[in-house]
Image (cartoon, rainbow, N blue to C red; front, side, top):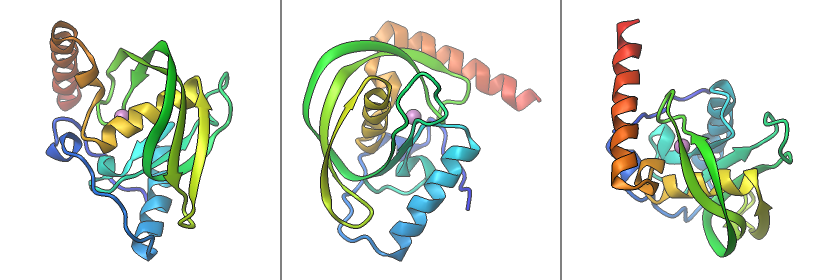
Length: 171
Ligand code: NI
């Protein structure tokens, strides 16, 4: 089932999510719905709080991005173990329709997370999938890409976003 995507400034996007203690049917359904919702919006990553559920779960699928490795992951309670390198990339976000901002991220990350079967796993990501992961991890911590900008650039981005929203309402 495709769920509604929460857009900024909804408060759920600005508070940290809860850790998942048990992977039950509800969580499995949520994960399935998150993939469907992400695909229908043509996104490459989605955090659970973006569909209004404040749990530490993200889905990633970079298959639609042509010049990037095809990585499909479900990450529950993810944490960064190691990170290195710096890269700047113009990111979009399904919770900020139409807005894209350039953000600095680590180039490579090693992370641990629980998979859908409840097993702890370690992943090494590099380049685009690593960027997507860090963007979604921020969501799970209640951080949006606006919080990664300097005050001046954040103000410009917010102005642009509000303008985009006003234009969308007129249609
Ligand atoms: Ni986002």
